[in-house]
Length: 448
Ligand SMILES: Nc1ncnc2c1ncn2[C@@H]1O[C@H](COP(=O)(O)OP(=O)(O)OP(=O)(O)O)[C@@H](O)[C@H]1O
Ligand SMILES: [Mg+2]
Image (cartoon, rainbow, N blue to C red; front, top):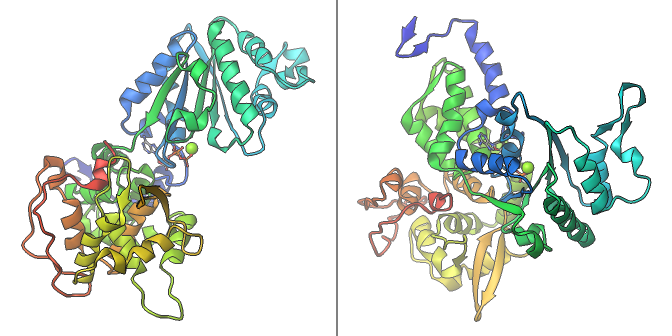
């Protein structure tokens, strides 16, 4: 029987749906199926154009976990035609790689010769591989075949000589208009971090910075999967999931998965806000161990004494950051005062912030000194959303305070609605922040 456009589950459908949730929500694995890949259509088009344009190559770079491998996996899927067959070779670089070992991984995946005498291309190179060998091998394809070589985790390479030779190889392939596209993928803020020797190849290399996903794209990740399961998600629940994900698809998968599982447990085909709330603990327990461990170390107690590290971290996560994600210790004062329910001035917590830049309690933050003042930023992108969810789940902050400092749904309308009063997590009447602000949430600001 149909209710709206949802087909009602029968008794046997619930277990089946549960299995499908696990298959479709994949916080640990990159996307491999174009249908499950949300948003980013401009970037997909940009990468496709790079493949089609002779002599062009691309570099995909951005924060950890933002979706680089996923786009590299799927962007080329629709490019195969009757007259063009893509030959995609995807390898991961590692810390021990040299130019030779890197291309050997590629050549090991290239068959040469007829059926009777098949060899792998790396067997034909007893000497160390050079940029010239790369050019020769990449030219050795049928005219209707286009090789795409994707080198992921490029940031892991430590050998500088490898990076220099790599730039040379790209230059050679481009100068000779070889019908082949090389795509470099890695965690980096800029192309310089990945390819130090980049000046000579700038024209041949299309730069593809991966931004965080928009709230709509994040909602799509959850919405599309729920629809596949013949379920739907209340708009308020979707909003919350996208808010907590802060543009990081990893959290959309993780929290989305647990929210849908909670709905299934309650035999509801509609995922509601209450399911998102109930999913919080299970979701948090499954967050990447390194993030949970970093939080535990940063906030641990000495001799069971109470401390304000959890509150300082929560305040730092709620602080308004500048365009490059940095904040000053004094910026933490306002959210911390709201959380504690009394005024906190910078000297009373700057020690805590600085300690979390050191090994003993972190490092959670990276620190920059400029004219004797310090600026800080979270090192790990997954940390900030985790702190906000964890602080809420543990009662370190209230929802009111989070709303106040991130301006809830009004974000999308760019209207900040001042709230009548703020109750701090410890029950005291919080210090009212001085100005009624009109600002988009800093969580979402980072994504744009
Ligand atoms: N466009 C997308 N639609 C749906 N899910 C996505 C999308 N992009 C990424 N994801 C999901 O987000 C998570 C991280 O994606 P991915 O592994 O591609 O990121 P990454 O940038 O390569 O990460 P890392 O820096 O750790 O290598 C995975 O769970 C993946 O399934
Ligand atoms: Mg990756």
